[in-house]
Length: 180
Image 1 (cartoon, helix red, strand yellow):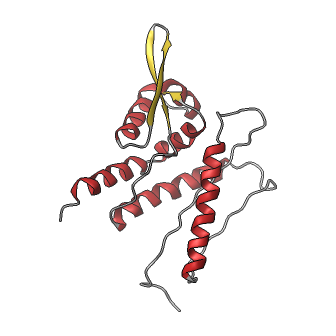
Image 2 (cartoon, helix red, strand yellow):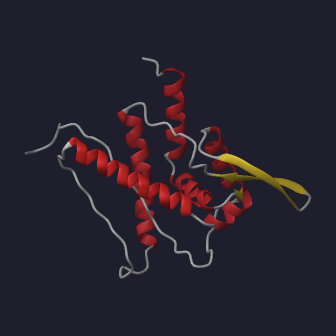
Image 3 (cartoon, rainbow, N blue to C red):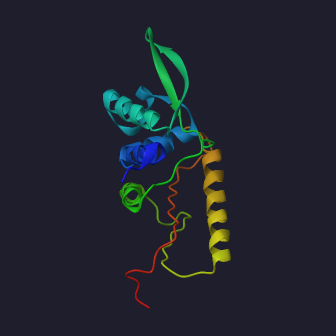
């Protein structure tokens, strides 16, 4: 069975995201446009590795070019994550699972970076049944909060800014494997 052009684009996009370094890059490029060299320095990567991953994200439609700058006589492209671009969702459950696996890996990496459990934060997990209206209200609230955080993002180490981790995965589930 063929996915068609749109389904293929969705798979390419999700596979581009299914890499922890690329998820880190998207987060980093939400706050400010950066060149491959800047991304490499910030994430502790080689310039070649950063360039490769940035090209993959650009080809998958996850980044946009945000100008160029002259560096030591050469030209360096700057990239930015554009929150206003409509992203595609997974065309099938296995593709979505691949993305969620990358999210889980990135969440674990970030949790290990946490230095003070006394700072304000929140975490929760749920596998439950709720009325449809409550589900839609929760989706709207969480989506609104995530958009607000993305829009408020600033360059790394900006004055009066705090580094935070925010990961969400909300989806409807079937009832297979669910014990009453």
